[in-house]
Length: 282
Image (cartoon, rainbow, N blue to C red; front, top):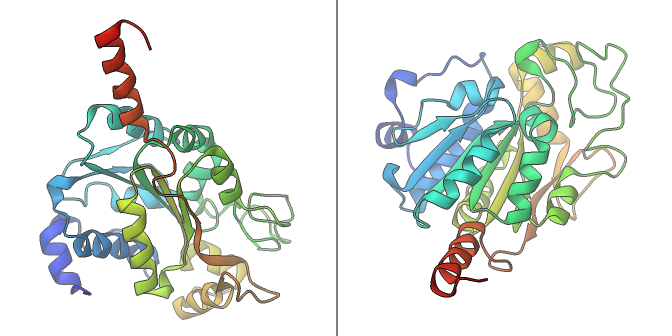
């Protein structure tokens, strides 16, 4: 059941933070609404969720909007904080982290890998605006090959985590993540359904969500800040897995689903602690 934006805002978000301070036409609001829509369809309340954010565009626009409990981490460290919280929180509490591509796949990648390794129950939503847009539009770890940016005026040519057959989701799968997906927000309800599975996973979930940045990425790569142009460009370069075209950049859908296949981190820790308390040994 799709909920009206006003209903979602009134129930889950701090109205003084709406509308956000995002640039005109920024796609981050679409990503944010998809998460809140999934929460509503799962029947969860504000007290069921702890919401964490990082810095950059993704952190700045989602920090403080959640009516319930939340926290902000320094650059790349929100995953370490969340992993510690996971041990102390009741298992029924959900952890949702909204982060950017630089935070997740750059400075925070090692912490992210350890969350996946330990299968700590949390849902990481990587809002990817294809570079460091909050600092002027430099290229990043998932910037498409050939893209013109503030730091690649002739086209981005470095090897990165989404080029030449490499996919950052492969790294996280190998590290032990139990649910991985990628979507662009324009896929609508399909993204909501995936997000519900991610949030419900009793383990580590990550959803990679590229989104449009008209102000920096579009202005440099497309030569225009007309919002519809960057929305159409991202939509045209995304395709469901199995339906890829030669110019497809993002294969979308559920990339890896192994929910329930591995012990969850906090349960594993507490089982060991209680065993030591009873017997004095592992």
